[in-house]
Image 1 (cartoon, helix red, strand yellow):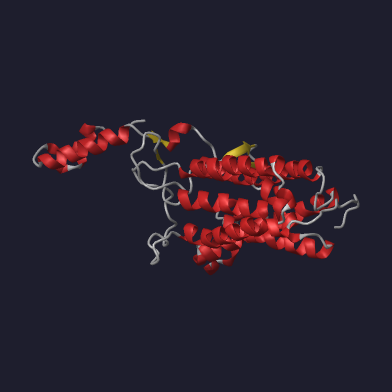
Image 2: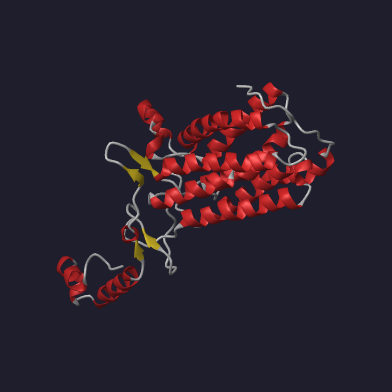
Amino acid sequence: MAFPLGKGEFAAICPIYGGEIEWGKELIDIILANAAQFTRFEELGLSKNALDLGFFQLKWYSLGYLAGILLGYWYLTKLIAQPGSPMARRHADDFIFYATLGIILGGRLGYILFYNPSIMANPADIFKVWQGGMSLHGGTLGVILAIWWMTRKEKLSFLRFCDYIAVVIPFGLLLVRLANFINGELWGRETDVAWAIIFPGGGEVARHPSQLYEAGLEGIVYFIILSLMFWKTDARYQPGKLLGAGLLVYGLSRFFVEFFRQPDVGLENLSWGLTMGQTLTVPMLILGIYLVFTAKSRRVRVEPVAGDKSVA
């Protein structure tokens, strides 16, 4: 965890360190001392490849999405096995395909529209999702559209379907945020906290590992709260309550972490005082509050949905 230049080397390239300007020497001493106490990202020994066979490489980023979808599906099958499920196993099986499309298309288009419109100048780059650049807000909209289409087609309850999907989402959130950290991307703002990290591309300054903050809040805390609500309360019989709770937990978590996360280039100083991430969570928070506080009035007698034939 050492600064790349020693004092002697620094003196050779920086005249004010020679002693002629005392305050300059003192300032640089402070910078060198502080830089030496922080971990450099390269020292963690992390690779962007989860699997590298030479002819084939599997990125952690791709694996995060894939594993998140598979774990989410596994947990969904446990949830729908309980009394009063709004869908049958066949619906869950088919939904995975539509949800995957929604995540990829919505996430990519959301990133381009909300964060990086310049990609439109080179249309071929739109499809390079393996290089990163996905918006969770866009992916969420994509999944919601997939749910809307499927529930309309199969005549299922839209809100109750969303409730169950909301409970399984944290698997993907956790794994993708961990992949962001492994990739050394989406790092946080400058800081001097003991666990700060000097990320490549982030300059010679220590930063918050905000990806891990998001993984903890959006993944672990979200999972605990929504799972407790599903298994220990009657929330799943109040259409929209679990969805609303999920929107609130995610929205509050993201809004909070944005204070530590470095804003995207070009979006550092929005005129209304919020980051783009915070701005996009405001509608989620408003909708979440509405759904939670009106859920009890929508409580209805629910009947299980039977059938095992694929509808695809």
